[in-house]
Image 1 (cartoon, rainbow, N blue to C red):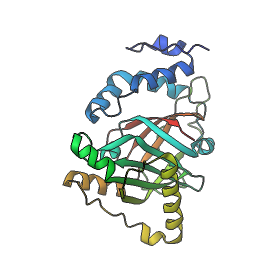
Image 2: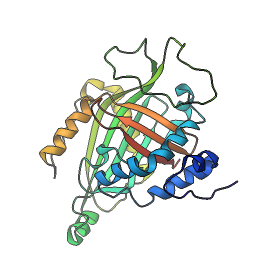
Image 3: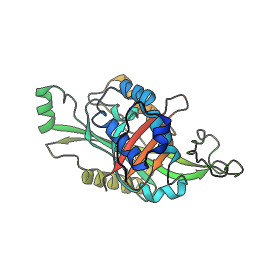
Image 4: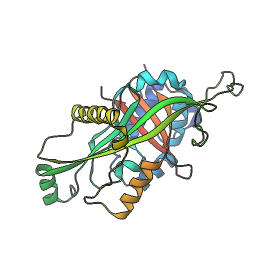
Length: 277
């Protein structure tokens, strides 16, 4: 199998001739160690450099049917790189302690640890040994069709293009991911215990169980009050009210390229994720 990496700028003929495994390896190499870059720089990098690679992977999505994607989603995913603004809604996100977890009960969550002041030596030491801030945005997910879903749901996400296959335009219903925000959980942690994938999974499982018992109480999303500013609080409110669109441009058992959009007026965000378990 040819796993040679492609060079930038990505030429259409080179992309079309490359093995899918090479495309994935190339993308992972391109975004390696770049997730901590400023958001504007990452957005520009996606637009100016990565978009041809995104488009080619979308064409090769081995699992375009949304209902068939559900079993693939279950588990813990690590966001290697992302232009999703929610991740940096608070300062000091720890990249290697960020996760997206899907359960098979219709719930998933984005979780991350934050250490304010970690770029300052003294504050970093204090943050490491004294406190951390963990944030979880829990959502529900299901596959719906345009005719049976809510009429005020955002426009159905576009499905990956599939050359040389019959057009699907004649089908009366079109599937889409119905994503709804459930609750926003936050916790101030003391001590130096790491926020591992297992710790994140346990916290998420407990939050789901608590929500299922008392959903009316858990739907009140608590606002962040420590070390945040008015901009972060406003973004937090927008996230809790949004009905985000989601599209797995490419998904297999170990790798995902995800396109999300929380509002029609908001730019699309892209996430490159790999499975942890």
